[in-house]
Length: 281
Image 1 (spheres, rainbow, N blue to C red):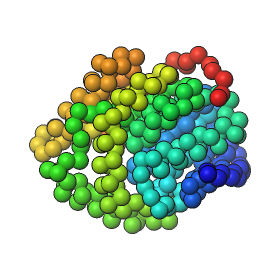
Image 2 (image 1 turned 30 degrees about the vertical axis):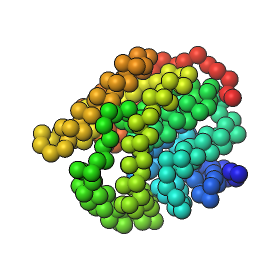
Image 3 (image 1 turned 60 degrees about the vertical axis):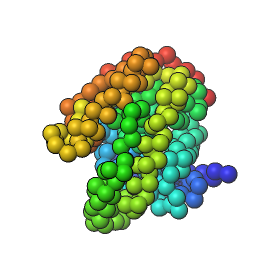
Image 4 (image 1 turned 180 degrees about the horizontal axis):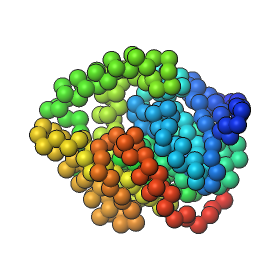
């Protein structure tokens, strides 16, 4: 059974409201602020509310924005397990508690990287619960997996370096508690999730917009980057062929686009037409 409790407070002139969701043994901090259409922002693997600060503030100019940290990220507590289903449960728990606090209508659900995959799965499992999906550089039905035996050593070294760099952020709003092994296992799992994600898209009943990077692996001409980038674009083209209703915007950026191109992303989201209003489920 999922248990959730809430604490709300406002500080000074800051109109943000904060509450805490207790779910599956994990404590998840949630913030809500801004005015306009309801919007929930789901971060990706190794990204936190603090990392996404610029994009969040820009979105709050036009939206009632709900943000949170996934388990083991930022101000959320660490967990005994890190899996796609566990993260999906975190998103569902946050959305359920947000509805209890008077979200006026189904939100625009924005997901970055892993958060995009979580958003697609949640929307496919909960018809009518989401007004619109905005997927930022994730949920891509790529033809080939990214983590292959040939690149495993390079990926493992990269994530070991990332985990080591995280030591300097312990105790801060940008900390990530996952080990290099956790991150490797999750990326292998995400590859498997994306191999079947087209079936999820077929079940979604709301508008879908993608904001994708042109060079998700960087713009190097040598090494694996060109292959990864081709695979990334091929996945989007595959999706749009099957689901022509999916609109796509491309940014001249790599996978860090939420940090390097926040104004452009906020502008794209701001210009999306509002779908017909539906009552909250």
